[in-house]
Image 1 (cartoon, rainbow, N blue to C red):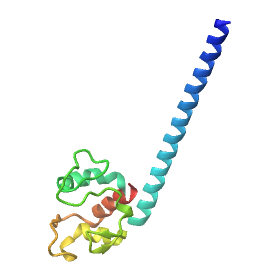
Image 2 (image 1 turned 60 degrees about the horizontal axis):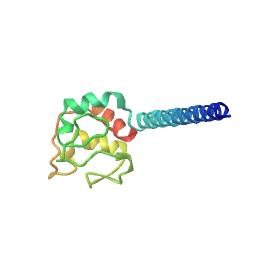
Image 3 (image 1 turned 180 degrees about the vertical axis):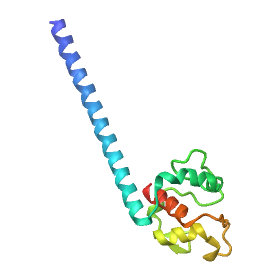
Image 4 (image 1 turned 90 degrees about the vertical axis):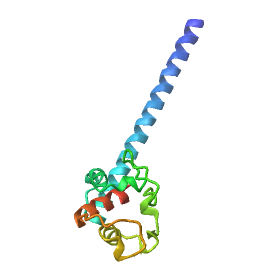
Length: 138
């Protein structure tokens, strides 16, 4: 009788492990699909490529001032954190949060706020679109 019980418990344990693994795979697949969909929408909204953004953030030193999700070492405390950017109402407190405004802000922040600490970096409009796509995709 104890062999039968051990065998039944073993099967139940294996079934439980299999169900947990399948559930984890399902959640992971859905998260990946959701991220891919968000990136596609961000590309359409901005005309940018979020995959190019990490190198651009590093090239222009954005991570020195901003906390940027998904960018290693981007833990700056000078500028606002760029987490959940798509949920914000305003950009730097002065512009409605829209893709065209974000690109314009990144390219020329002093055009909108003479007192901003954000520097004029010389970034191109296409590079700004790539950064905007990244921020809206997260």
